[in-house]
Length: 334
Ligand code: COA
Image (cartoon, rainbow, N blue to C red; front, top):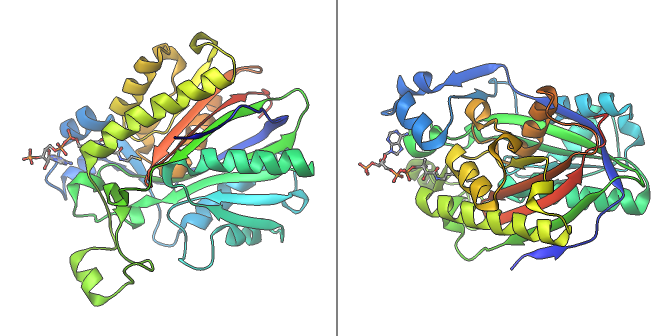
């Protein structure tokens, strides 16, 4: 069962930034090195292309650029932040966290920590960051950043086709007229092997045997993940709609975790949200895990489909299992 918090926070998004690495990898590019095809990938996932980090880039590099853009738009200096949260499941290093590196890159010595809730991490980060803003009165930077292509086996066609790299960031600030929430967050950790990187942690440290059997790569049971993603994101979205005292028809924009077009379509139609109220980026970004929701938000803003006062429904699902949803009133100047 989830934790649903009906409270709304007087917190607004005042800056929104995105960063995508330059290199584009199309389905045809993958079909040249894997036994797959553009047609198979498009019909099963809706993905046409994805961005991939350069050889000298890591997750913090993407996060710093997205964070810089969000701060510039908000007109907030990094040194004025109360905290920096980086939602990621692909940290630069096992130790230390990625957020202190991002803080240093932005030129600040503020509180900075990672949130690892896999693909749901950005929604988790919004509730933690929003709560910090509400209690401290200080602005908080929440970043979702991932370099998933660094942890997939490039020779495994069942996962290599799905993922992409990128980062999105928001600046949260106090605003008595704004509403962030309600939130619904939940986990089911009984079967982590459904979607995981088996080795390289404390359960099974890196070793020659791990490298030999590929235990350091991300693996999943696609069908089980698919079914859980649809069920969990639908139920979680319904809980925040109910807790928010609104009707489905009041949702101006639905931004779901961009894992797979068929998953998004299934959630959207089960919720009864109109097709033109759903924003899609998975075709161009692939699955960027914790970065997918802020990247999709920024893409919606750039496409001109976000207007001041809009009610946005965010929902995400990922490894763990984890899931999270929230409502967000758009202030219109981000
Ligand atoms: N190209 C061509 N064929 C492929 C392939 C690829 N990239 N990947 C798998 N196949 C093959 C399989 O080997 C299998 O062949 P077989 O029948 O001869 O054994 C066949 O296609 C069907 O595989 P299956 O896994 O049943 O396909 P599917 O219809 O379930 O689609 C996914 C696979 C991964 C697209 C789908 O399960 C999915 O999207 N799951 C959710 C993944 C996700 O979003 N994860 C992250 C969540 S945060």
